[in-house]
Amino acid sequence: MHPIALAGFLYLGAFVGLGLFALERKITGRGRKGGVADKRVASLNKKDLPWLAAATIAGGVLGPISLMAGLARTSGYSASLLLNLEGVATALIAVRFFKEEAPRRLWLALGVMTAAGVCLTWDPGLGRFNITGPLLITLAMVCWGLDNNFTRNISDKDPVQIAGIKGLFAGAISLSLVVVLGINLTITIQTGYALLVGALCYGLSLVLFIKALQRLGAFRAGAFFSLVPFIGVAVSLIVLREPLGIAMFWACLLMVVGVWLIITEKHAHAHRHERLMHFHSHTHGDLHHFHPHPEAIEVPHSHEHTHEAADHIHGHWPDIHHRHEH
Image (cartoon, rainbow, N blue to C red; front, side, top):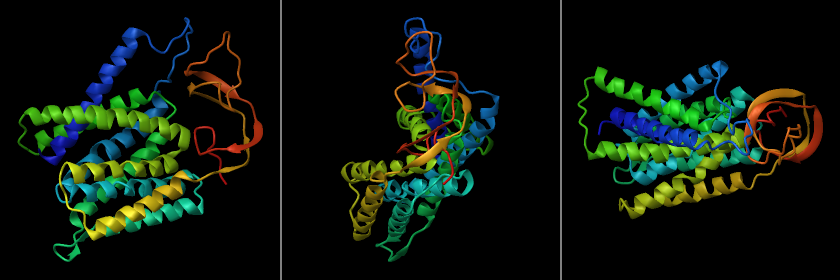
């Protein structure tokens, strides 16, 4: 299947899968408990649309097309490990443009992962670096790094709604490009496979990732994503029967070191919360939501609420309530 067509069907599958889930959620009335009017999730509003549009173009159109083209020019395990560069791109953008804090160990981790990515560009059969495929995949990771940071700014809203809208427009734009460019498009069983992969591996995973962005911030959510490619490596070795070379061994070792540095990070200091009023999904089991309700609410819900100014010390990441500068 042509890379642009495949990218379109993957995101269209995400839209279809999440659309069915949203319909089921509406029909069954999930999100309410005991007649409480609060919704479980907050919906998008007009000020969120520019961020959603930018995320859709970068991560829903440019990123997938670059990835599909790169996959056709490199091995499955190399492509899987190169996905770690999404964390590098996300981190650089988060720190440089969105003022997230990053300690030295995280920079060290990202440096190690970058070195692993360089190892994966080595082609032992040709005795030289083969950069075309890895370069396209790296471009995709930059696009998704932008996507992660744009989505982080609306991650307090309904992740199903965000991912569904993104899937619809990204899929429609990519498939429109197929028509405009005159690319032959035949509906086969492969199309069904692409839709199914899109529903699960794009739609469901994107919803979970948006939830992580809300709680961790773009830098750390992107860094934790570095765990995922190792599953891709294992599958490529078992299913695709791809050979394991010396470059792959060193790349895996470097990636393991990088991931260990990330998941063992701890961050705590005295910090101040200024008075804030906002609207997002939350529970009352953390250190930041003490406002009263007419009756007890234990499930996640959303409404406009106020946080009074507070000073305290606890372990935290740059989630929606901890985006202070250092």
